[in-house]
Length: 299
Ligand code: COD
Image 1 (cartoon, rainbow, N blue to C red):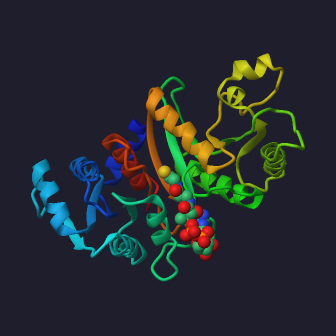
Image 2 (tube, rainbow, N blue to C red):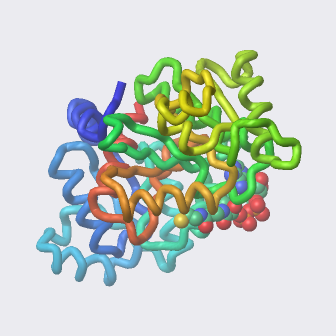
Image 3 (cartoon, protein in one colour):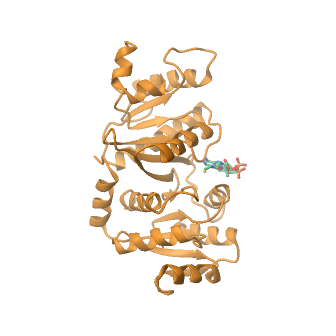
């Protein structure tokens, strides 16, 4: 069971290099992350984008201009589709979003002709190593589905559970975020939390423990749960936190990035292959963490 990104790097290095396509690679942080990952022996990156934008950046970083294979893209859309197709055709195992808008990247992943659709809902998960807790928690979905309904939440939870299993967590604990633990019919998030919790108990979500609705304090702290006299095994032990919508998940994770001692990685699940999706402002280490994740969750 992975408790930290160090565990993930260790396995990635054992696995050896896997081929990864990079959509719109003309960005210093993206190129540095690809180079570092290559030197660590975990990835062989194939870049797409405008060569006359990528090559000067490689020069600036002191990386030989022929270090990476570069596939010319006439514009962002063309570069995204070419990177997606490399994965679709089996030439690469996973894809990294480079310097382009998230929505454009996702539209490429969803493209009806060359995309990576599987018939399932695709969703984003942020993998957060919280140093204080010495554990990894997934926060989902703060990156793709804007206002998921109950059906979409079921799929989002299932995608996260599948990733947890790939991360060697046999029976992941899933907490469904709400503002309060009581099932208040006026709060849709709490109704969904209660239904998901029951679906989990009845085995409808696979091998996992699901509890909800739960407020964030008792998700993160067993003591807080005890104080509120709530008996709950998931409290203080969550592996997955299902957030109600994109803005809440996105804001929670970004708040942690700027205020807390964490390590972060992020990817889209449910597609034919993992799609590493990070904010353009994310650091080299966050991109590197995500590349290591891509390595360990692919064959
Ligand atoms: N899973 C599978 N198929 C999907 C999904 C999904 N999550 N979302 C859309 N589709 C399919 C639809 O079934 C349809 O066939 C096609 O894609 C188009 O659907 P639309 O019209 O809803 O798609 P778009 O292009 O308007 O929007 C899809 C996006 C993923 C681009 C959109 O939901 C979006 O912008 N999400 C937020 C991305 C974002 O800004 N994240 C912030 C991170 S910093």
